Length: 419
Image 1 (tube, rainbow, N blue to C red):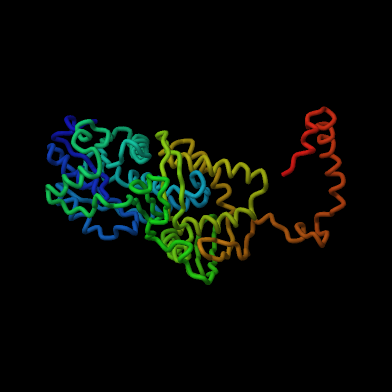
Image 2: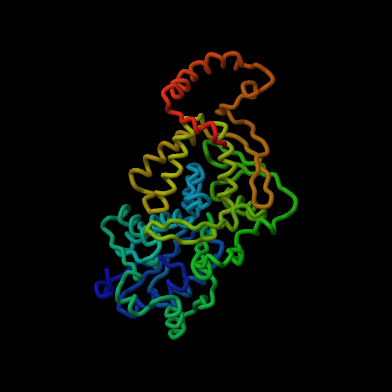
């Protein structure tokens, strides 16, 4: 869609209250478009004052402002990520990607009540978020249209980047907080913060200049470890340090505990965007990292080697699906159903030690579905596993190994290789 197609119509704009939101809202209003600003309350730590967001959006021309409370929705989506161990390309817990799915899913019912069928967003044409907003809307509301200003030639002809937007807002006396000198941009929700762009675009600049907002960097963390005990029941954290918690409370408390010790703070990644380019980011997700690591320790006790291999494949697949905006499609639902079989067994109490950014295993107890047996694992006692029984097992394995050697399938050069 372009501006000429929008004149005289109403759009629902996913508004954060930042520079893009103010600029786009005022520009659309000036073009004869009615803007309803919808802001998702994702318990974002960087902008808790929704009255201030409303004031900025109305000052920018929004006819109406609606805050959509999504605390439980973002918490549930985050816990599903923990249960699937779905991290993208290593350290990234998909916090922004999950957030986009939750935002669109929360906006659509509100839009239907208002009779508005055009969803607009401020994601650029070079990033992943445009894909997420587009695909999630198309899947959940195929009768809706999506308007992306950063893909509109008329908008692009007026605004080439941040500087033009700031000048525009200042010329219209809009109450923005952004400055040209801002070193990077940040996106936030309950699950974590992502920092990118600005100075982070140069690989010659160390990421240490980023100021964490959800905790401290590992080097600034306390010199004394803290032990945290987490109780999971059917995959959900229900108690932390003896305190009963809901899903939202678990993430909020885990953010506080993890952040205080530098857990999940300042994770650096040069990642592969879905649009085909690489980008660099610094991530904060202390609660996800704390809960996710403790949950991983629990899974180590439950999964046999075949289930482990299948689960690891599912983890990577789900992480990629969410990252690319396919979190609600059939393939993602199928994968989550498989993960649910594991989740049903994930009950137990895990104690971990938090120290300088690390989450270290301390103990496990009350794990009814654990496959770990102290007797069988012991190198001292025989237990149920008789060492002598391994003789026949190794003879069977030797048949294949000898056949490989006799058939010349293992080159003699292998004898000189080490490692």
